[in-house]
Image 1 (cartoon, rainbow, N blue to C red):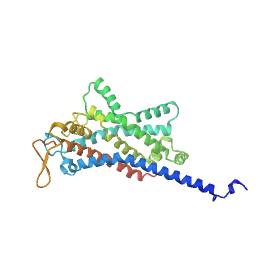
Image 2: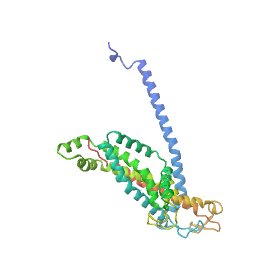
Image 3: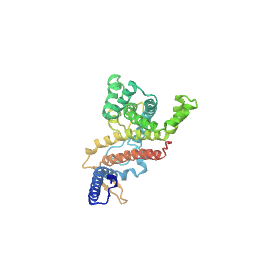
Image 4: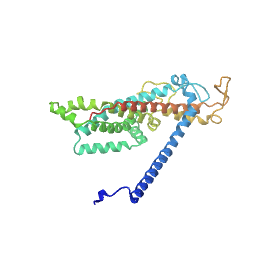
Length: 320
C-alpha cells in the first residue's frame, strides 16, 4: 500500500492537525494584538486632536476668516488664509510633478532598457527615502543661499516636488504593468505605432489608477512641515500670489500658534457666558485652541484626499 493511501484519521494525524490549529490560533492572536497596539497611538492622536479642536472648526467663521490684526488674546479669526496657501502650494507642486512623474513611469515601463533605466530606477528609489527637511535644505541652498532669492510659496512647491515625484512614478509603474500585453500587441498588429498605442490604449486603460496615484501623492505632500518652516514664512493675511510675499499654510499656522502658547497665564484663561460660549478674560490665550483647530483642519484635508483616492481606486478596472 502506498503512503498516499495511508488513512488520515489516525492518532498521528490528529496530533498534527491539533498542533496546526494551535499554531494558527496563536499566530492570529499575535497579529490581532500587533494591530491593536499599532491602533492605540492613532486613536489616541485622533481623540486628542478632535477633542481639543472640534469646537473651533464647527464655526463658519473658522473657514472664512484669517488671523489679520488678531493677537493670542483676541477671540475669533479663522484658517482660510492657511488653507488657501496650502492649496496653492500643493497645486503648483502638482502641475510640475504629475507630467514629469508620469513620463518617467512611462519610460521605465514601456521604453526603459539598459544602464539609463537602471540608473533612473535607482534614483527614484533614493528620492523615495529622502527626508522632507533634506529636500527643503537643498532648495534653500540652491535658490536662496546661491541665487539670493527671497523665501516664497513657490520655493515650498519646488521642495515638495522632490517628495511627490517618486510616489507618482512608482504608482504609474505599477498601473502600467497591470495593463495586459495583449492590448499592446493587438494595437501593434493593427499597425499602430508605439507612442500612439501608449497614448490611446495603455494610458486610458490605466487612467483611474494613475489618478489615484496622483491624489495619494497630493495627500503625501499636503501635510509636510519642514519645507514650509524653512522656505515659507508665515503671515496672518491671505496671500493669493504664490510667487511673491509671505504665504501662510496649515503647518506654519500650527507652528505660529504653538509659539504663542506661553504668552499668557496657563493654557488659556476663559470664562463661559450664559450661552456657554467662551469669552476672553484678562489673561486669555486663544492660541492653544487655534493650534488644535488648525491641526484638525489639516487632518480633515488629508483625510478627504485619501477618501477621494479610495473612491477613485474602487473604480479602477484593468482589463484581463
